Image (cartoon, rainbow, N blue to C red):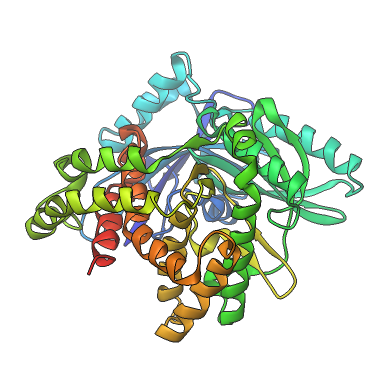
Length: 446
């Protein structure tokens, strides 16, 4: 899939946006690139810098079209920082009053829709302040002070990596070390609190927190050594990641009330069992007959399995393995690891739940890595279950892990079902998440 990015680039000081005026045709700046995760924006800013000589950050995405052939169109609003001098005679800053002179068509309609929102009172949704012009300069001032206080010197560069409703992530290069800054919305406030909590009590489990601004939901963390676990080809690293995460979960069992107090919701097996019926009969998320939706036979099988799956919830509860910290999105890309360190990032979906729900996505990642075999999977699972050895005999722990595997994917599907439609419209791959996780759940049931 190719993506054509059309850009509304704001002037840093004036009420104007950048227009390309080539051969008598005025249009928005645009470029085409291979499909990337819709939260990633570093390449967009890099393209603007290379083509137009402007330093920008993405404020928000405004539109994602349906595919036409193998091309989709995305529209973004960007803010310019610093010098606004244009290096080509084909580029010009158009004042808002001039924009009506754009030729009729979809592009003019896009600009008109943006301008109407710009003219009206601009609303920040869910505390996503990074969508507002001027926010980055406020963050820069805070970063400069915190980095100096931490002995890391002055800011050398700030590279925006991600911007979407779940977060804004910046790569911050300082004189004496690299850092990562993350801001999250009000609805994900728990991520900052939990990351700080873990950094204090279990400093080997998460990146070092250099500074935090709890009310603004800002975190500044030291860069970590190592690679993402999904890139690791040494099975021993996968074993070590699983073992360290299990130790963290067991250590958090007596801390669940503290975790609850800082924002971790409880996701019980009873709640999961009750949600299975509505999930299995919701055509809006199952998407029968659509590309990547569930087939009629898959839906029929899922609905027939609901009583069995509810019994599995009850059966798993009898094993007496207590609820504890559950990452909620433990794909291998959320581990940073080498032979000396192993940290876990992106705690936005964290909750208090059955611990074994975490291992299923990590196991899928192991299979996708090309390392999986019965022997390797056995090593991986034993490394994880060793952390729970005092709770039950090995055979009983393995049985509980088998019971939990499909339930973990159903739990993910239930949470994906709750994504706001406004977010899904701009990130349409999210429509596939419920069918994908339900297929993974069905694959776990013999």
